[in-house]
Length: 470
Figure 1 (cartoon, rainbow, N blue to C red):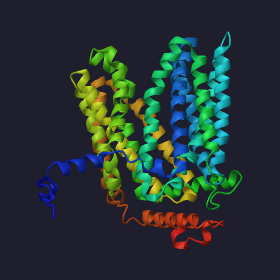
Figure 2: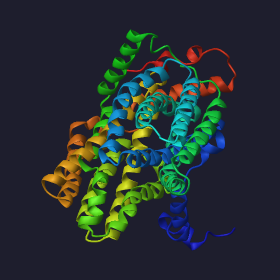
Figure 3: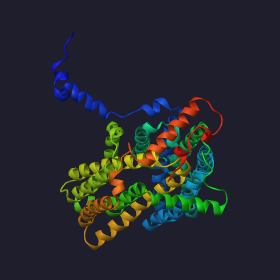
Figure 4: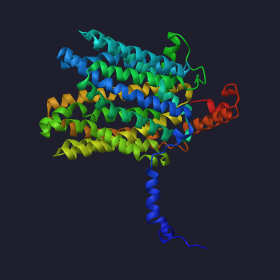
């Protein structure tokens, strides 16, 4: 009988074999892409969507500034888009719980194609209209806010319950790829061909994404949780808000992220930080991209996340590291130390986002998933906007370094206070949490019914206890 190699026979598996296992544990889990056709379609569509969208994200402010010569005119576009984002994000969540989510994706995708085509035609006109840019920008915010809850609410329907951490991580890669490559591609197109061609690229990306959305199988609601009509929609939104507040583990995901972003979002200070503090204005691009690079590195080595069960603690610790890394960036005496600190901050924010998404997708019942996705969209959209306002006010009142460092320190303190306040969030364990267990049983029963090709709804196959949500 062959004896084991010394490295593998050592206590605890010490030696090369142990390190091989540890390195393998970091490897990105591609299982959802291999096993789920509809997740592949969603992933491809999302990646193309973000890539084209980031090209327009660069083109819109570029065109506005060159037409008006006003920084305020550029900032006003964000203010105009904020109200539709809030109102239509909540309505889009209710819509996702009432109608076939594939139809919402296709319909809003077609709408975005047509609206971006209007931007293309306006940019190609001899005298482009600023009013058209503002109007279409607001309507695009409406379409995007209506679409996003349905897109995010589909993930738990297209992969197995235990594959959600890997699916969320893979979806994040598509987002980050677009955030890195889209602005660079947009800058090249704007410099060589102009805004019209940038919008043309976005139209093509939206068209491709919409075709992939149309290839999905139908995903009608599993329960009639939101009634038609204005009154029914309002009641449905109110029910989703009450559910989010009543679930303290869910409330923790929102409050921790809002705390971290409101107190420690330094992006708006990067131009002043690069030129006035670090005295390296040419390093501005590095500051902007450092966080995304850190997020990509965290994503590429995220295989370990599927073995973590205390997701609330992971969110708290990751958000605290985010704050600490922002402090280090603010204190950094050189560009490269600041870039490394911001990369750590980006990686921590990515890990926090992964575990927040896992809690959402593994515990929220499908009949409320759309409305809660709308609330989630607001929580991670409003936080950065408020955080940039806070950073600017403190920088003007004190200094850029003071604003960055104080924000990071307050973030660490604030996140710690939230963890002490919401003990259910800190103690959350995916193996024993009643909501996670209920949803896991429900998904398993639904998968078993689909495998048996039962044509009726899941109500006959799933016990009431597996469907009822508290």
